[in-house]
Image 1: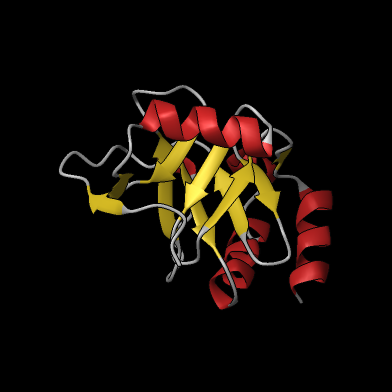
Image 2: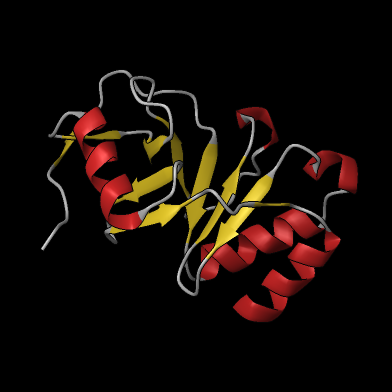
Length: 138
């Protein structure tokens, strides 16, 4: 059962992050590892066992087949959503309820699969983080 009902956005924001799982997540780590340190300087990452999120300016985000894009909700500081979808509920209420339930200030709310992920502990993309991700995503 979905956590929220969603609707298509007619005003999709510029991506500020991407979300990947499975093979696209492994391909994303590979794409980042092929870049030099200067090209990764503005990027940060949050990872779980199931998903990899890379945040940064749209022009720095790598293109990898199978990833989906996210961006902060313009109406609510700290609420990150898919670029093509909006929750049916008011974004400020969604963010307040999830902050109370999950904690954290910056929260990514996702669908298919449904999850909420705190972005508060994101790490800069560097060689050590990429090596760890490569080992974990194997």
